[in-house]
Length: 404
Image (tube, rainbow, N blue to C red; front, side):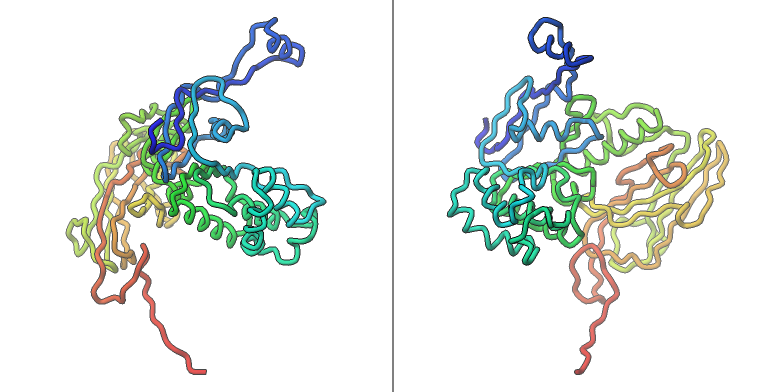
């Protein structure tokens, strides 16, 4: 294995025996009856470099959690070879192994011993765990008295008390209150900044884009795509839309951010400032987005949507004509133009992209006629007449000191 890799998977596969009943399964295990195998995934190849953050995405049943169980040693692979260099911390089932009759403090000792940590090592992190969990006097009460939020707080604090070389997270941050979710994400980012390699499974594309620079897409019992997180998420969305519409298959090798069934098609998009096409704006400028589309076949309804993203692919703002109370009326064989007008584009300095989509009703996954990812890429420069700001937003803001 390359010295820069902390995880190397070669032709990895996992299958389970399928039998019609208990006796037939036992016979298969004893070799007296041919066994039928159901492959969760097979021939999966990838490597994770030291300090890299990688998201794992896919539909329910695609094998994401099973892959993590193989990586953590909870279950063994059926085929292939797996090499891991470094200690692994897994946030798969937070609080697994906690005893309801033990106090929070006692469960910290118990969990630490399961992780082969000495009593001295456990005690060295005890104050940090108590402080991070923020459950007050409940720390010395039985865990069965905890609310679900308190349980998650303690479990996450125990699991992240020490920085691992590899951190594996499986939807663990989808629970708990919003404040603690922000705190948990900050802790994971702290680990990553210090050099921890991150594997993160989530159905939330915003979370994947925020935490990961790369993503793996699982589906059809195999690895469908491995690439930049934004590109893989775009392809996954196109794949879901194509399947929902029973449209043309989408090829990951050829996918360039454009997909759809084609009954309606976007012909041209242009960004205008002061009436002139541009891809270079000043923060706070007045902008018009002009979109021309054509109807090629009868559609049951039509909505034109837009989505603004920052350079990392993070969704900033989205809306559509249905949301705005507008009805598109072009008939088959006709073209029409829609203008979205933004009196003040309150974006901070940086690079951004705009995606446009033609679909039915509110959701682009239903009757996705045309979806054009990164149809416009543009840059925003600071406005010299505004005070210095950081971030993707450029709010109109003032400050005043109020005398006591």
